[in-house]
Image (cartoon, rainbow, N blue to C red; front, side, top):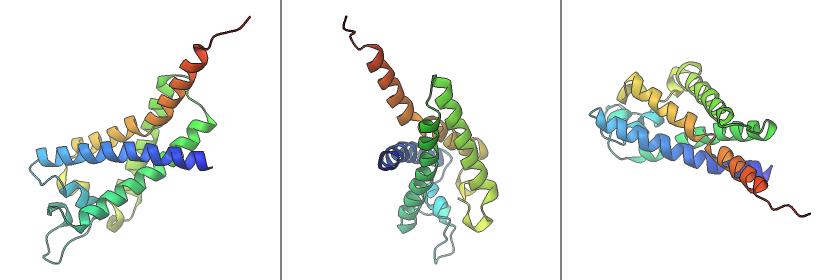
Length: 163
């Protein structure tokens, strides 16, 4: 269980960093302050009445970073448990697992959560950019386990045989 948690923490760090960086880049590219995407994850408005997604760096940015990481940690835990139950035999297995987890994350975030609990990505990002952020999750959530499996196979395949 400890190894699963350790691996989930590492996978979540990769996924959170990539989705945050891409989200901030795309948010800035679409004319909003880069931290607005973090604030939209926190989905909180300030006392001045401006939507959270329109703010610059603030305490909501920190809350958005934390919430994004926690969401990635949940999906990374699911992915790491899945990778242990059904180890990847091919790269396609890891990509399929990542795509399914990312699709589930999108469905939960954008459709299953109550409206007040959903990340307000739509405030700062058009649909293609939002999908790109979730695509980054599809690529990075299974990355740690796929690399570990590849390294283990390579190490086993290159072992010298005696006799």
